[in-house]
Length: 347
Ligand SMILES: *Cc1c(COP(=O)(O)O)cnc(C)c1O
Picture 1 (cartoon, helix red, strand yellow):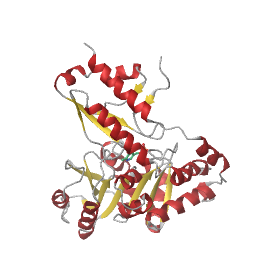
Picture 2: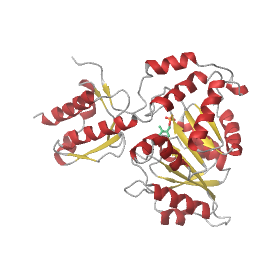
Picture 3: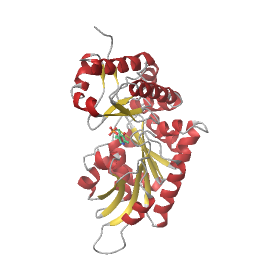
Picture 4: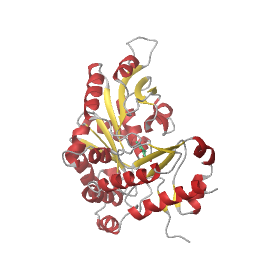
């Protein structure tokens, strides 16, 4: 029998730490629909200032954050340019189209995760009754764990601005991008990334380890529009300071440590790459993608199920995916590698 399962399905599976729970219990609370929760207000002020924006809105999920963002930028019959693999196109139930009558214009990603500038420019529609009105460029960083280069963010958003488009960043893992790109301290780096955009969404419930919550940041006027949309979407929460306290704790204590998750992802990738038939994409942050080749591909069905019996949880929705986080350590990573190796070593 083995110990607690090592859960590499996502960085969303983390349990709040004892210190985070203590911060939640100690938080002063009020009714945030009346704007009267001091902890929510503190979080909103903190994340807005940290990322260099006028205002912020605390929301339950990254999905709702992106939805409020897109709908605050775009109206019925407008269009947003977005990548095929981006969460706010592929993984959010088509919410912007369903709730906002906003049409996505998806583009293919280059191998580094960027949307090529020429494709963006070609997708911007002229002012003509045939076309939806192109209003917004939405990017994501990290994208599937890949860090978009700073020069690219500058050039893509400048291109958008030249054409009168607004810009939104899905920064669910913005702090992973900030930590992974090194250089200045991660808070400064996060602000630098965010500075290229009109609005940014960040998740506290991924690598930062909070149980629930995301924030949308932008200008005061933009956040006022998003606030109205959040209410319509059923996202007006009451004593939400309980959750905001976890996010504040995460901002203080869980940003710099993301470097540990990235180191463990590299350790995992190196271990897996040594197993014949596994093609491992070198991770840039905390997500490891693996493709099975040749014989291993034929034998790979049943790997996820087998790993589960060995106390190792992973996902294989489109490719094998392993994500490191706060509740993963080197011993767990080594156990995961050993379990994969054992599976392929079977006769
Ligand atoms: C997880 C994620 C979201 C959505 O967050 P939820 O809180 O699960 O709704 C949005 N964008 C990206 C890039 C994500 O990884």
